[in-house]
Length: 435
Image (cartoon, rainbow, N blue to C red; front, side, top):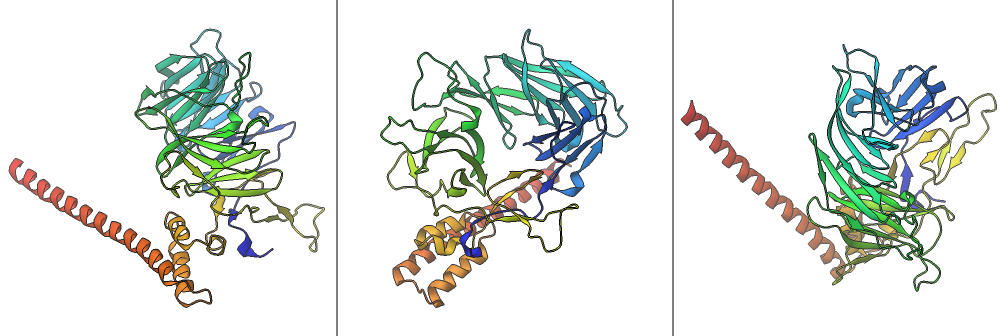
């Protein structure tokens, strides 16, 4: 299949790690994008690899039992390790600080720790089945200080590291979500909201799983994405992704519905502000752009921007004694996490030019993407000089859109220049009159 067929690909340099086994446990930290390979509880070594080779770290720990969770704080300054349901252990990695473990038990009686999240280099949140506990870690004193806590029954949780928002699933059905935001030593409770379930079970039971929820920052706004599997009894048997906009202040509202037009198992990614939905059985992916709005519709309903396609096959060379020079590499199709590798997913813009026939929509789509300039130039060249020349109204539409973006850029630049000049004049006035 030609290169022009694929509009999604995996990055060239995946994070590689030792395979999970009876003596080696593997953990992935979403916040720092780090993979931890922990051998024999850490006694024979811990290897940490991130998206860049320079972020790799190797060390040893005492084997104090099975590791349930392990994460570095921002900047790899403090390591947190959970081995029991009641406590988390800490190790300083700050130069000139004692490299000794210290521990913190959760404060709530009879609570079990579901997990923890670093919100700053020295601030951490314990999520338990009875609520959350927000701590400041004091590495010099080798202890923790409780900043704030909140009692609430918790089924599971989600964390968005870009916005430092933790989402807690509450109630018997699990569909009432309570968000908390963390910033500079403060914990704030946001407005809770309810996910609309297609079928309400009777009697009530946990019906919303963390597998069907994702939290993402799209176009600078926080969204909760709900993968809604319709039951066969409904009028619309196909699955869809429902987006709830979660503002810092005010109530959370359902704003977008992404039509998947099929059923089955799915996985979600957000790449370059595009929602990417992977369909397991067909090994294909589709993308949605929530800025491509349908006219006169309060709740935007979206169809895929492009037809379903597989991710560009990634060929993994065979290594070891069984490999021979003539042996072909092993293709890797859809997997983002595959055996001993983790990839970043990337959008390829050139193939979209021939896949999205509506030139107006194509330009709208491209203008919102990174590294779009050369692709937009190729579209303009194709319309003006290529075999598939565009009609005059289409050309006018495209250049109107480009001129509007250029106008907005010039206005923003002019505003910035005016503000900078006023600020400079104020500074000169202030210092000349106060010194």
